[in-house]
Length: 356
Image 1 (cartoon, helix red, strand yellow):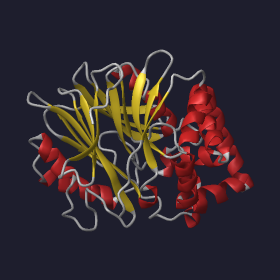
Image 2 (image 1 turned 30 degrees about the horizontal axis):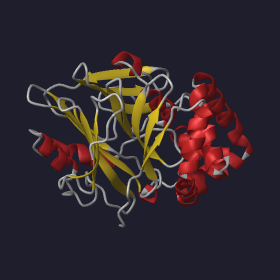
Image 3 (image 1 turned 180 degrees about the vertical axis):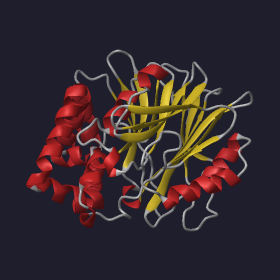
Image 4 (image 1 turned 90 degrees about the vertical axis):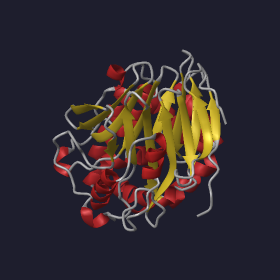
């Protein structure tokens, strides 16, 4: 597949959140429009559902709850839509897709389109403190991502790997408070999900402004968050579900691998063979060094369910490597075994200085 050059856009400080969103939307308008036109989940499932009268209660509840809880991020979302020249509804739907899809009748959904993704491996011991993350997505999203380096009027600066048209970031990010995160999708059963709750994209946008682990620990309708605190030299895996259910696992010297199943929060969940296979494969591989972590995330031994994905449905877009002792974030393109770095950032500098 053709290589995608990951562009970075520096934005801010802006007078309003709407202006920040508008600037991002305007800068990446072609990419956003392309993503929306090719996104089969949007075109085949979300838009037909949204046009039906029975969608109104859920859609209105999602919009109202998230707008009331996070008015700045809502304005940012609207700005992104209007800056890119696309309908606000389309941007709303892709940002709430994981909160909506469980409520679309199964006959209208395609299991392959809805496949879940991402793998993480982390450890905090005497010799190293490292978090590594494969950002996996539907193959239609290849070439539809960008980096946002945002600066707010209060001096906060963040780096965010962002999907075209979505709030920064449903993938991974870091700020100059020394706080960062990577994310894993998890599959709670429909019965576990409270309709109209706080969206995962709004929670992860809020994580970009976190000041501490406690400030960052918030529940969405179902997700796995790997929270990183440079100052505390700490990594925590937080699993969440509806009704503010949260489970916290403090990562220690024993390497912790997380795919796309709940591991420590007691939740009824859909069995995901892909995730189970990756979890089993990771348990077999060496995990003694940073290079081992990258080799693990680059593993393709299981042809059906590889950890490093190259289609036909899921694709590993990039790999993020955070070294808490070096205080660096590196973004690796291609198989991480080869270690080809596309971007590197100093996490100790107030402006998150780009190293390459």
